[in-house]
Image (cartoon, rainbow, N blue to C red; front, top):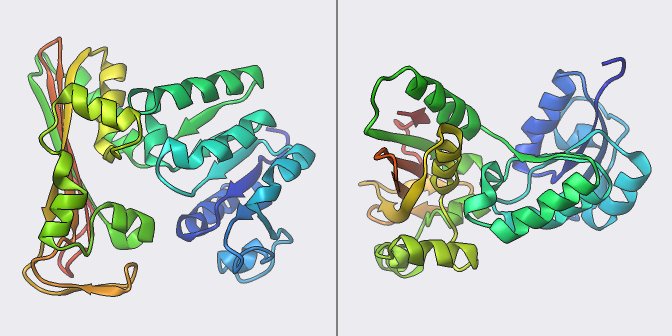
Length: 298
């Protein structure tokens, strides 16, 4: 390009510290930033990301995003707030309304057509009408999308794709940690998270689409893989299983000690059966790590 990409950052929490640094390292100009936290609003983004100097851009209140985006017209807005389409609908709407391309770390935004079809259709139309794009990204589209798709393309016959992705909930903030049941007793986990484990495909899909159940990250991933590989899903189920440890673990994100035997997080197992006979069984394990544990994709 003959000029630098002009970017806005929507959400200035834990993840944005990395994202704004990435933008700067790749040569983008950050022209605006937004947040809801009074402790962050008004701060220079250089201070927010501990850049060593001010950068001349102060964090605005999210309620002013429409006006600021309308005036500045950045090329792209990076959205890093919460995980679901319902959570980020307002952010995506204000971007699309102003013709600003938006990309989000929200896990559901990777492939929301199978979990929030109505919201996705509405946003898709708005983006097309304003000649911009709305997309979701993050590690899943590389390690659990393109990589799996490429490996599958080299095989003569596939009957099952199975894998595990593990991550430390300490790295992603309190909303994610609580969403994974970290800190709950076995009884609390069963009552709050595991109570939908016995639902069949139609039942769980209905509850996900009406917002009663939050799908795991692999719910979207399996849908993406089926779409990419030309597979036809005939059923998809999800089971959330508590993860535990035999020793107490300290959680700075939760601000508590997770007692031995209580949930450090969960494994969400998503199983997709397809008309082509290929089964996709994936699970994401998000938990408070013990000292010897580490991120991995298998």
